[in-house]
Image (cartoon, rainbow, N blue to C red; front, side, top):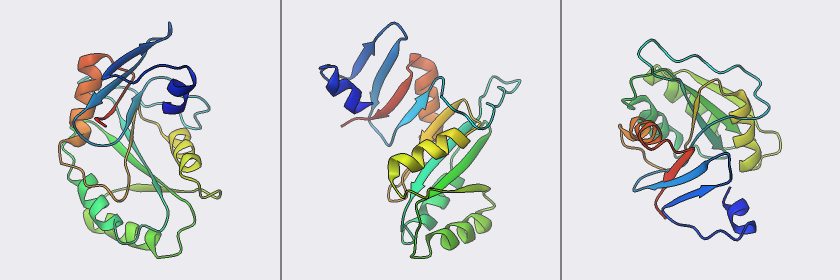
Length: 173
């Protein structure tokens, strides 16, 4: 997306509205990137909102040799206070340091369900695309293994999307 902005010669600002499809970029004072909107080539159908109007959030994490960081990542995800349903999808790019085993063991301890997918190309972008295609949620939250997340991170991102009507929210840079 950043590359698309650059190619179109659009200057970055705190809020940016582009094209008739109303693609909007909003910045927040915390964390990674979250997207909302139609996704191409979904391999799973989107979940339906609950009776309370809450939508499922799909947390997508690319991973390659992150054994040192995955236990904390799992604790941070398990501590999220988002009241709706969520799923966690981790795309491993061929880790050789025990990342997968450490991640799954930590998830068992936290009673957190994680879907592992193989990213045979090993590239982060490819892993993200695979994770997004596998996601069933209306909202995709992209997290990284080496970043810490406050317990209200996912909830605040979703609230910001709903309150602003933005298509994507992300960190202040």
